[in-house]
Image (cartoon, rainbow, N blue to C red):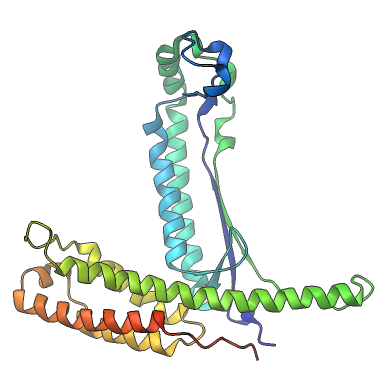
Length: 290
């Protein structure tokens, strides 16, 4: 049996941010506008904007990890090709540094934010809602994990248990393969659909806005595709190569400013879109483990 974990490992990113909210008990609501069982309310403990910089870092780190990895059938984990592990580890370290900086900024303003909350919440303000060690409400960490076939030592697992767990492992590997292929195909199809849509005219007959991210997202995909195409999806690889040749590393501004180039790229990308649609709708050969 081919072991997927010879090609990489799992990554689990855990990030937590203080919720800064509390449920308001029905007895605290002086204006009885509804039956208590039909009414739920919560109060914000600090100005919500104060936590937004921290949440932006978390969202950016999760988006980066999703774009640099492959899905895996274990919740909270993604599969990372071995060629990308060091690069991703360095990037997550950068995100952690940014996260800690934002948390430090929040902690520096914590007393002031709490004082402002006392004014805005009035009688609903409760000093006990605010943790003394608010820093402990924030965390950002990740780990790399390698799975393997369960040990066949019958002193630990009965033969029938070992056989069952081994079959589960094989099924997980197969599911991971299927998810990886479908994820890359879906991601590329989405990019193609967005760029061809940008070349079309809007309902008012005017050209749609061609944003920088329309092509920048392509280049980010090209950068990681070879490493993430672990299962040698040759059909997809050919279409990715065609799209890469069509764009030719040109900037969005270069495309916007050249009508002839814009029309050529639009025509060629539409052909790729048609070919990609055919790949997605055609029954795909089931991958069989060696």
